[in-house]
Length: 492
Image (cartoon, rainbow, N blue to C red):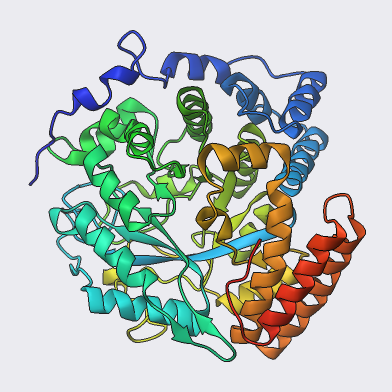
């Protein structure tokens, strides 16, 4: 088993008086504070709607303490309002591409853990990764993926960089145009600055690492000593290293259900967002909040799956949306469709057509072999079905990746998000990329729903002349016409 390296030099400069930015005592004290008055809650909601910066953990704790049904509904509505203000009515879809289940860690809750003797281990070759990308881009219609590996010497930065270049090179003919993956995000182990520079050079989109739990004692129990993941600080300060390496688009997350005190994890994420803002002027681009699910070969008590109820989940999503108003919120296919419908109005991204087996998109289509999975999915519907439902709910599916390629990342994207200007680019590009997908992949029923939604969206664009002047509308119409004729990847 690989042992933990002592990496104190990589975070010593970020400590304050030898302490981390996660102040356990302060966060727990905030959660123990008396319930807030309705007036305080409404004042917090007003500050969130200003979308200037992440709220203090004390404000997030106050929102988490609300139990009154009427006041809770005000929180949910404010969360939907913030999402609409910052991101309009769009929802971005993506898919995870699991490339390897080799892992040197022994996390008690994960099917990939090294102690799971029943796991069938596999690492995709570059030709196999190409086949996966071709299936995702050419058969399903995804434009962005998140590349996922376990922590292992065989799947380090060089492997991931080569995989990214392979994926970006894929271009598959479709009904009217072509399919390709335009953005590769990465969910991988914490890395050194040098390795992160390798990913930067290869064209990484967002770098995503979940802390899993911000509770130090629980973290130590779940991540046995002698493994790389046992080093809490090495993981906690990985985004600091990412910024140092030039990666300015980062994503946070926690695995809800590990900690019976799920509210502590909400405050941990908020504190993490505020730390990045304070240090770098740039908060997380996205935050994820998956709930713990069953996985073969794990050793957690069955009761762990009950730590976060559906009502708790809806509340934590709303509070995170309000507490970090500029960040994208990702709900995953771990959740059942009915749960996703409850929260999608507060979220900006979701995965669809998800398969989490190694090689599962290109091999034995539809197979979900238990021995190859990291956990059990709650929503296994196709991308076409998901997009049809989103259209029914009034959400346009966006496949836009132009902002990243045009330099709207880091400090630039933060300013645009906080000012509300980014939603204007997004609305235009959502229409164009949705038209692409409808022509290349949609069923007849979903295409009809999508075209009705596009008509509504373009009507809104024409009516909002202050935001979309005549020359912008004229350009949109010209791009739209070219896309209908088979041209692809036109954007603002």
